[in-house]
Length: 350
Image 1 (cartoon, rainbow, N blue to C red):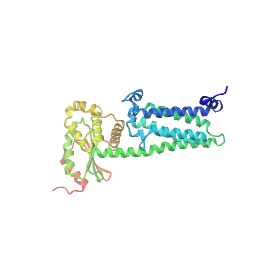
Image 2: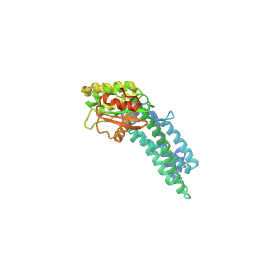
Image 3: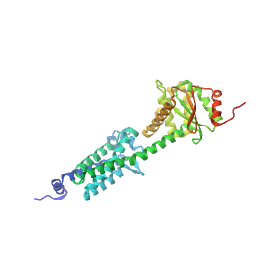
Image 4: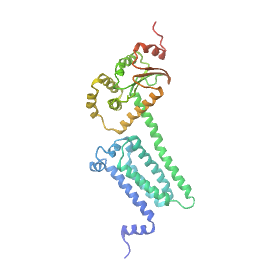
């Protein structure tokens, strides 16, 4: 009795072309993962299987990286697998090259999870594994013996180009976001040629005493763009928490609230621990926000290294991008004024 139905077709295909069966089977697994990724958005039970609302899957889902052009990655995945399977049916070498494009995209998303979002999604990693396995299969079986090396070189090139096509715009956007985040943690006109950079630590008593001087400079020299930079003193256990809190306020509520929060943290420096114990639980769990705050702290540290900052407060006066004066310590307004006048081109008072 001959084979009948779908099972017969698959058995015949297995006997004649085991590679094709392996390809389609893996593609079906990938489709299932895409479906689960989409269902996770609406069914809490699936999210629970991934670890619940505090899992890496949940963290990734909440970021802007979970969609592309407004369409969820799960839908993109389903469309990609459908096209891949059709392409494999008609041209295996082209399916192999197309796989390189998908692999580059998957490598980029793995990079995002480890180095940007800093949260690992189990479904995303499963999807990466499926795409990697399919590409390994195609790499060794899809290309003709003649000029096979050229086909494989094309696969590698497309994977690299695909990764770069995602990575470079994202890197530029990240740099833009860090720059815009700096504009929130600052005061004045960011286009001004005159700038004062203030390095401080929320547990530093000298920084607290220096704040009135900074406020007076902001009032008397509105043409100076004041940038507030974080310089966490080693051994200050509360400063990293205070910096994270102030950064989250800046990220979500903007410049005005950041300035109020900064002032409050210094004014209540003696009660900083109790203040943070009340405020920190109110912070949203947002890996993208945390990454933005971390990026600002890193940028501030790099700038501090450039200026050889060793303590706080430290203030740098900059004109047209050139540092012209660095004050180390809580200088008085009267001591700083001649340099401020020189910075903006004001005639000194007689």
